[in-house]
Length: 248
Image 1 (cartoon, helix red, strand yellow):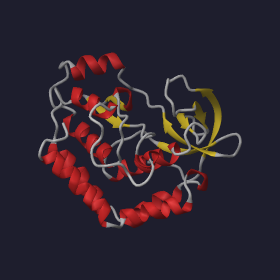
Image 2 (cartoon, rainbow, N blue to C red):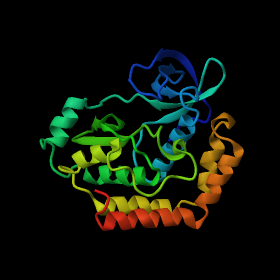
Image 3 (cartoon, rainbow, N blue to C red):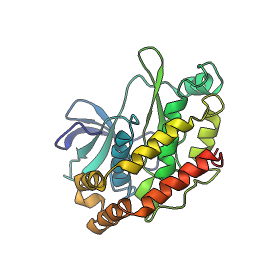
Image 4 (cartoon, rainbow, N blue to C red):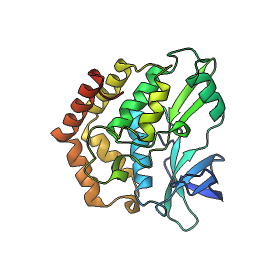
């Protein structure tokens, strides 16, 4: 969630070297922190998708990096996600989490919660680099970040319930679940929260977005969908698929 009432001025920006299609810059903002900055230039849908999903994750008690609206030198507003320290590198992720050095099941509930949210917002691109594994006080922790190909980035209405079986999200989670077994209770907890979030909260998230990120009619369509049976039908369908083991 954003901790800032006002957009953060970008002090310095370096072109992104992350090899991603959606991140424009890695920049230092006026709060002294570094941010991965995503504008409407590469993909006009990216900032809105990121903002909405970060806020939705917070409602579901899923940890993400801090996010903020970034004031660019041309006075436009971009989406920014903090560049967190304490991150475990890819080798350690694969060695300790995939290959079994890490205690089996230690992160199962959090990974399952993230997976449930990814299903709801139709995020096909949760690869290893989009799980932020960090060193906690005594053990590893995980945050979700990068929703640039989720939610409204897929157009509207959302695609069907299930993600493609060969997409990054499915392939990566299938590797994780070998040592970090799927936790149905954690997934159901996320779906239960999604079921009870009022449309007023969704309208508030949408209202916080700059006008350039999403047209007014699009925002109205999303609020209408959230307040309809279509949302609960989607949640019911995901839950049924998970309970019957037809997803993983």
